[in-house]
Image (cartoon, rainbow, N blue to C red; front, side):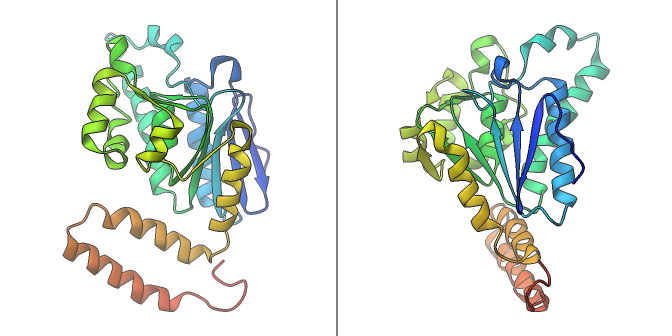
Length: 251
């Protein structure tokens, strides 16, 4: 791939696994417009690159992501409706891509993962958490609403706990995340990327077409009535018989 690394996002290829590393460590990788655009563009490119079979999303430094960069809020005023809508659309695009890209995405999370950062972490297909993680949605403490991350939140977290987190700003520890089944692994902070890479490499082994179909179906059936889910599964079951079997084909 052409070098798409920017000041705010480091892109690394490790065989079939692409690592996207948010790179604003002095701001705890807070999501300003530049970083959000870089994430959107990098995910779109990875989704179209047949050489990329899985992704790892992580942050540089001692935090995963501290949410939206409040330094930009001064420009997001009622009189700037066009700017407000463009920024909201950009954030929606990033969170939607976590699901719509047909390749598995694993978040490798240490330190703060709050607000929009929590949304990125839990919106991935799998999550590896460091023992130092602090995860939650403290927006209402600042009279803000975690509006753009709520859709993924209520799909992953039990409704009672999710509402408590929104209403009180409660942050979850690694132990609590594990107990609630919200993470795949809990490891030492310095091991989150290596552990996420192991999961990503395992996800990169099946054929490309089969993995794409599996991820797409997985997310569809969770929201369909039982009969419709079975019908969708039947369609994929029939489709997969046509996946190439020879080594290297359909990969």
